[in-house]
Image 1 (cartoon, rainbow, N blue to C red):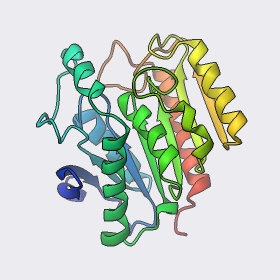
Image 2 (image 1 turned 60 degrees about the vertical axis):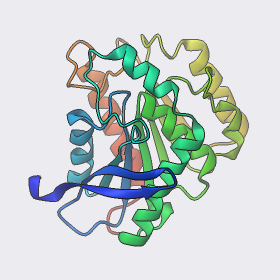
Image 3 (image 1 turned 90 degrees about the vertical axis):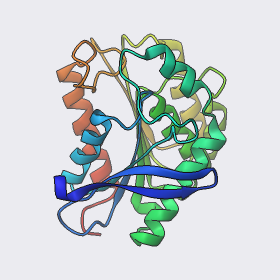
Image 4 (image 1 turned 45 degrees about the horizontal axis):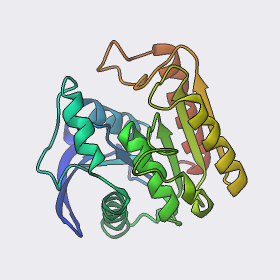
Length: 241
């Protein structure tokens, strides 16, 4: 896909933001905003964007670290990653996602209702946050997003504002999202009348979809979660409409 991928600059309220773009072979009628893990828009996140492009989605992965000057961290830099994402609250996330939405609307002529956010780890929390504040968003998918139900940037209290359908994936052995938080998310979304499904994968922990981290990757859970994600997005955004 080399000729169909590139970096572009999207202007945000906080300045320019580099954004990785993976374009499908056919003209795009739907788009995915891929929100990064705690390590930046690295090779794994770029690969995720390319996977979506192969399924007919225009995929954009914005660099949510652009305010810090850090582009990417190695997986071994866990403490640095935690410190960095702890500084990124809801206002910054919303500014950045809104900027990508506006780019897609103006440059690609796609309506927000044909655009989904899909986030991983820190990006999962960011995707949930976007769903609480961007009412015209088409859908949101959360892969193992810690900090939704508890923590300094928790947004579960805003569940009543969610209009988009949600799909959530969490590993049963993910210590960053303990069972009581999974249950709290279920209860809050049910009470808010959100159309959602949340799947818990036995034998899987945090980052179970990340095949770039063999110690974390769980093939069975990853395969099932990915297929559920494609089924969900294809149902919400049928190709060609």
